[in-house]
Image (cartoon, rainbow, N blue to C red; front, top):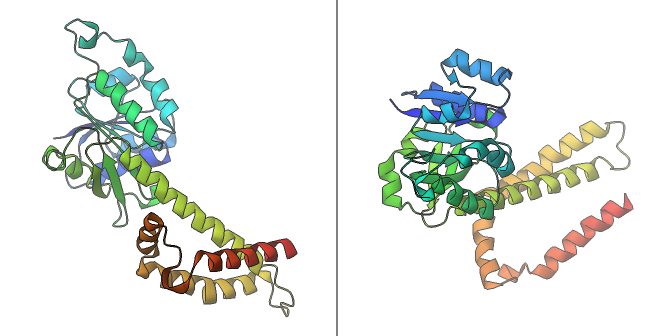
Length: 283
């Protein structure tokens, strides 16, 4: 039976731990959280997890350590006591506190932070360090829509496939190993995807706000007008674009700096955005 210690039982950490316990071959799961009386912690204990209040003891119980905290500063704070433990790097024979452990860090951060954490935890004895991101919301973890991206700074694709990490995380979602030579690669992919997503959201919010300011609504009401326009115009436009993979097409043009694809040049895009800006100012 696999042994996993899950560090961080917030909304996402709880969703990950719950998905693991619901899998076809649930691991022996130990959980650690700074706040022991969180409802998520109690729910996981009911599902079969073991809560361990001591982080050092929690880590000692498992061969795989799954980290999902608020940010990298929280990881540094939580693991600070481990850095004071004597290791082989200090010229003695005491193994590091993470000796032989496989670390899977799914905390959101930057590529630089991911690489630095890989160096830090490897120095504490970790046998392998994987950094990555969960590309869905907590509510979608464990569903067919869920997938996880991972990268490392020294594990080849073949070694990754033989190591069992993907199988271990299968209850969470599909695992995509994006790089074995850069621990920060998955973080870069994650931030890029989030940037695109938030850009889409902000554009949609702005469009919806404009629709709500339509004059002469004829007694239909703002909500009725907005819903009709969103369902009848905005959603069909966005839905029609997605199957054509505009990002895949655009990335080639960005690399080539070819802004005049099929007659729809950058000038036209600027012109259309200018109209949107003018409309916002007018309203």
